[in-house]
Length: 341
Image (cartoon, rainbow, N blue to C red):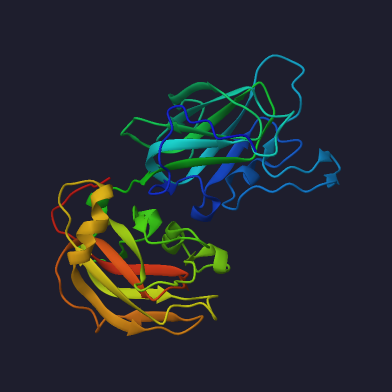
């Protein structure tokens, strides 16, 4: 694969992929996907190459691929994001598309309060036309603080894209949420973000905030085997400040590699940047004292929690290493905070 294109690039690690099919992202319209189904482009797994595999329409490709255009115009797909959000950057991934990638692409966006776009919808360009290369990542930062619910992904004039990843912060109008209704403040769909970790050798830290239970070990967070003193950890920024009432730590699918125990610290962080969080977290209060874990199980903790008030961030510590599938932090939102992004 070619070296990723770095113009206008950004760090995608701490942002949620709003176009992840696991969050419910879906292509609701496409001009042409003759060779490869457009929704393959939204799958969370890395694209693969299947040597010598063909279907009725041609070579099987892991992504979206349209036919060779023999008339004016270009192809596009309209995508409903899994959750509306403020977009921080995009990755247009053309891996394994070599002689059949689009020479360029652009992205437009809209925000629909209810339902999907119509012919009357006004689209805003958030990524002007950019040049593409074959078999490459194309990372581009987006500087725009408005939330979007749908994208129109344009490729000029035709061709194939393996994956489209849209990184950002999920948006939710918290002003309409009942203050006494418990909600998972760590959930990705509610704006929770995994922003730092000690290690993610086998599985990404952001997976622990995804909806539902994990489908396998790869759909969780797993560290390498620790050969030095210490323990592994993940820091999560909550989708909204709140008081945590119940914690669920799920080790589903982790059997010979689950952590022996875990604990959780929390804090109300004011100011600063994500990069400063790691050092600060050493001194956060203890929300959940150390608890033993079992393999392949969902562990619920409520009575064990310490009352540390309203918090914005947590750090889950696992001892000494291993993997967990999901982390749920149920609680009440902070009163009179209003809408948060």
